[in-house]
Amino acid sequence: MARQTVPVDVRPERGPIKRRETVIARRRVPDAGVHLRKAVDSVLAELTAGTHPDPQALQRFADTLRGALAWTAAVGDTCRIAAAVSAVRDARLRLDADDLDEARVALLSARDGLRLPASRTPIE
Image (cartoon, rainbow, N blue to C red; front, side, top):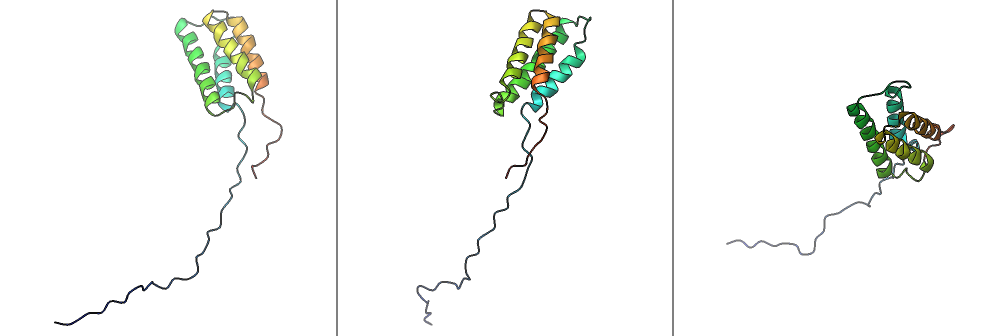
């Protein structure tokens, strides 16, 4: 029987540890209330003056605005566009009360509060 010898405490030879360079990607600062602006525009496009939509359409408008408000809250934009959010909430209440003229006024006010900023700077 042959004896085998095993070296003790032998470590493989390694080179110096290389650090990875961190890549910083520049991206655009997201606009506050993008989804709310789209919802307000879509409801205003369908809610024309002088017409009275059916109850299902009114419910769809309210659901569209509710979803956009939820999205706005989820991404943390509610505090950045508080006046527009308040106007959209008021418009939802007006739609539920079947006061279409006041709902349009509230949505127009919200759209004015959701204007795109003039300049957008990248995150550094």
